Length: 129
Image 1 (tube, rainbow, N blue to C red):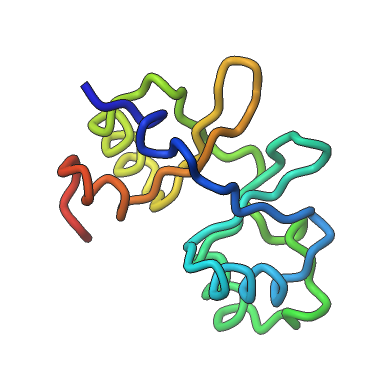
Image 2 (spheres, one colour):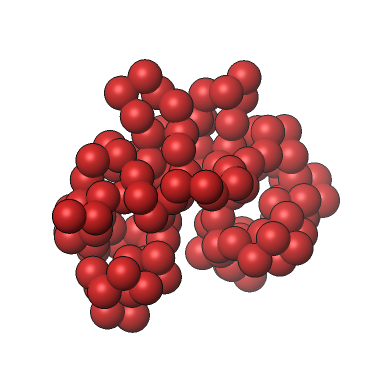
């Protein structure tokens, strides 16, 4: 049976430091074709910043993207999936939490990757929303 470890295997982590600006995060997501960036400090997951967060910040709050840092607007301590979770487990957790992206973290706290709804659709575990 497929696990999320297999889905994220070989992924390059999309990550930035918490003092990165929203504009830097948005540019990173566009340049790398990803919908989220992990906010990491010294190898530790501190948060996640997603396309939805960018929309909320840019449009709804009108914060200056060049002066606002990820630490101010990220989702802190995001829920994570263990590497042995199945795609169906991921769908259930993401649906319940209304997430589109979830980090996959092993028992030692290492981030292995991020599972997205798009990934789950590709393996046939979810239907697009």
